[in-house]
Image (cartoon, rainbow, N blue to C red; front, side, top):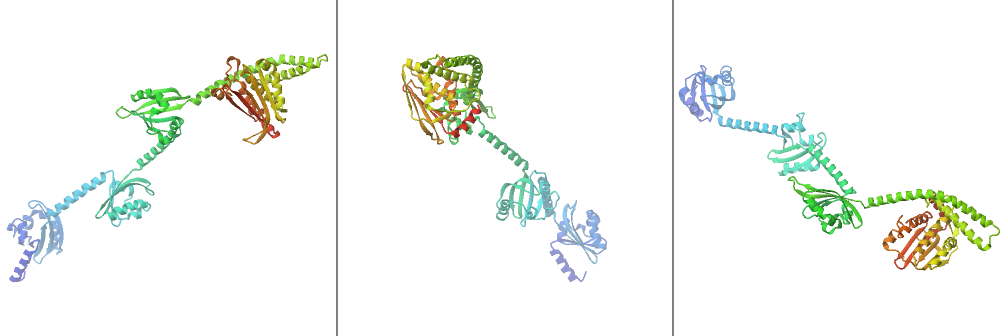
Length: 594
């Protein structure tokens, strides 16, 4: 060193230095230490002692190599290291070469290092937690660059490990505008939020996302909910299917409150059966519904936990089958009543119609057999009448009756051959006037009319010819006049009128025939069933087929038949038969179809 004055100045400078300073000679012995160093190293006892002998920890790395490099190679070095017993401190050390040895600057950084170690441990634990959590986590800075991705985030969106430092929007350009707005609000305005969104290529996944703003940018928590969303979609499809079936099924389905027996839910068929609007049925009670009143005792039993199956009830002329079941909650208590009701009215009618059809088939088979047996004696009668008619000794006064008998026997033969209309019509239509049709039938009943005290009034205001199957229409008229006679046991009047007319519904020209009687008339119930096969008010004296067959004949002639009746006043039947030539092609075609 220089002179004494300079030494004093240097010592003062070294004492003022915030670091601990020692000097070591080339013999590795301590020569100088400032007060900070003396205090840190436990007193001045080390001065003059060998560095490595007094502080054997200096033989450890990186102490020894740094000191020897500074001493032997004149190269400065620095490091931070932990010095064990007896010091047990963390040191920040710098070794500088000097003319007579080395200068060592050092300071105790134990507090800082322990803090750093604690931070590292916390960071390590946090990293461990982030990696084991099921949520994926990444963070971006304020330039939207990826700063961190945990293990799960890397698996989902960065399996190649290339996202760190990349810009979010560049890597995922297909984010929707709605999602970008969520991110912007979180980053720029600090608004935390969450949402569920589908991310297209390259991910093709559904994610549930939570955004957490922070001072350095944005932390994003997200999880893959694709399976859940697909399950929800399947459930929605299933629910839509169930709802469609629920709405469209022909069975009335409803859910009732177990206490009040009011509707909690019901499909359209329920509203249709009950005759109420769909929007009005919810909350409606059963006490004002006829079917509900019938089922009330059973519903109370169902509310107690007992199911009832295939319960048939008839209400207001309608037939229903009900299945009633309790709906239990997780505690095993009845929480509601499920009802499934099917209307059987049409089914019962169809069953009745089937029975009627079977009856008709039986009648057809019987009629066919009878027709075969009747035609043989009828043929003999026809031949005998022919012989009588050509006999020159037959008085002129009897010839009219013989011809009438021939005509009626011929008609009976045709009726028998037709087996009560259960066959195809084979003859061609002919032209005939209303007077010719009705007159022959009335003349047939001359004796019965006289004996019954019944007067017939005929008024034919038209001579228009009707193109029809003459015997068929006479069969209809015969049935109507016979019914009129049966309705007047104590005498009365039958009024027959005919005039030209036009049917309103299709402007078709034709002849309108009216047959009215002053008999006992029909009740509304009888009038409603008047054309029903096998329905009769004559007990054993009637078959119930006359008007049913007559209606079919008129329909095949493209005509119409209407009836009006009042009890105690009488009955009026009106026939409209078309007369245009063009109509007969359609009529013949219909008849040819049986």
